[in-house]
Image (cartoon, rainbow, N blue to C red; front, side):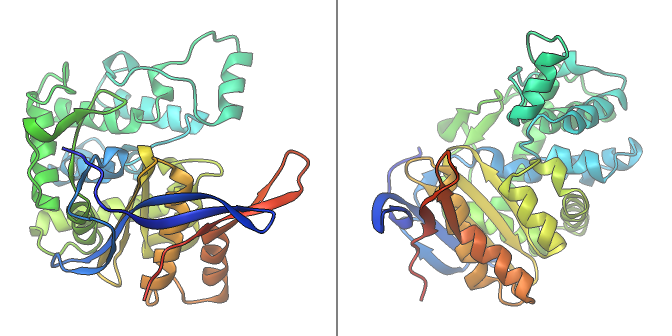
Length: 343
């Protein structure tokens, strides 16, 4: 079960030259062989990865050949890995994925919520809609990908969110194989979109993304699948998150040099393919803002080969690891900054 293992200081918030708030949590950097390169806090303690593993859930869509047979483009594959803002382009791509197998949004079992990107929510309401639709759900791409996989494989997609469904079992087997961690009834919870989510050691989560970034330890077909997913995300990072979002901003700048994915409750992962490293962060209080600055600091420290090649690279990560905070009048009141101690 997920617990409250020993934590380290990840981030702090200042105001008036004083530290006003602290964010504690755990973080770990792991190589493709599973060796811990650096860690803070109890990284063997289990956490729910939440949406960070969407890219791993999309592996079977590519590895099975379904993505090719359905002619899914980079935008669709990126959306399958996404926690998007529900902007018009996100909803359109999710709808097109479903249309490729003769389905519509009624096949989605993720539920509906208003677009996370406020201008998109306002635009939908101004257009005369009094409720959102499932395409706006930040997980609609992941769900559309599973519907596509099921239909391509001749499996009825109904109930695909059930752990006993054939498609769910297949993608869970991939999660287990890539992370090396057990995924069973005893460590299963239910995610916000009704998909299963499994509590695994933070170290195992980072190891999975070291493998995702390198293909090391994976079969030839699976290694090809993860490379294709990384390429798709790098080609269309907007689909992974959206306007103003951390994941999109970082990957829009660095392209294939890194893969970043935020999950709910302050969990975040990254792959550094050229370094052969995977990174995982979990904040104890669930604050995504703290995970962002902590991850930025870790990318600065461990991405010397790939993400610190130019002054522009250094500027992007410096700005992301120390974020200026302003009040409603635009006045600077303090900063949110990484507090990780890295030797």
